[in-house]
Amino acid sequence: MKLLALPLLAVLPLAAANEVLIVADEFPAMQVLAKKLETGAQARCTIVAQDRIPAGTTGYAALIVYIHKGIGEPAERSLIDYAQAGGKLILLHHSISSGKRKNHFWLPTFLEMSLPEKEFSAGGYKYYEGIRMEVVNLAPDHPVTTTKVKYPAGTDYKSVRRPAFELDDTEVYLNHVFAGERTTLLGIKFHDAKTGILFQQDTGGWWKRSGRGTVFYFMPGHSVKEFEDPAYAQILVNAVNFKP
Image (cartoon, rainbow, N blue to C red; front, side, top):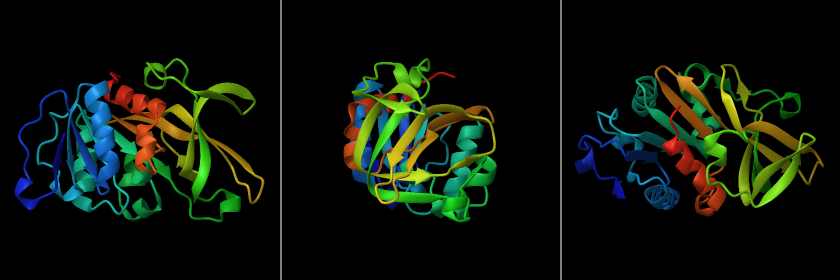
């Protein structure tokens, strides 16, 4: 695993077919993920800040995005171009969040979705921190959610018993609104103890085509320990290995 964050390393050599580029602004969690991918997917991972994305990314087997703060326009364009040229772009946790509303293309055009700014009670976007969330397998026949994934529990999700794993002290995003077509992989189940409301939304993980490439999104990833979860780590390994 390589961690490149210095100005002198702005240009990387041409990537091999089994190399994965991770673009992040919080690095400890991605160092954990990189080790999981190196073991589970035999990938060689390089971690960079968004202003160190190499000029040529087409040789990477996958490009993973873990950006908490804003995505600058040069990085936005580079990530979109990579996917539409045939790459596999994997977005994690806060790579889809309210701060990305500022980007011109990211949410409305590229991902074909929105985070409504209307009142939450009317379906607006909201997030909760420090909560317990269940992540539910909604695609029991899909290789990303099933291959070598051992779900430690089951849960009743919209009146159907489904495999799930639990995350404590995590963060959930509610009311992602989709416009374009995508394949749902994971749902999220969250009980708000203050209001008594149970939220069950098919937004925990999905994939879609973009140009000649593919885009994945997975909501878990609020802390380092979530990438240590065996079920979630295997799902991410499967996403890197996935052949659409």
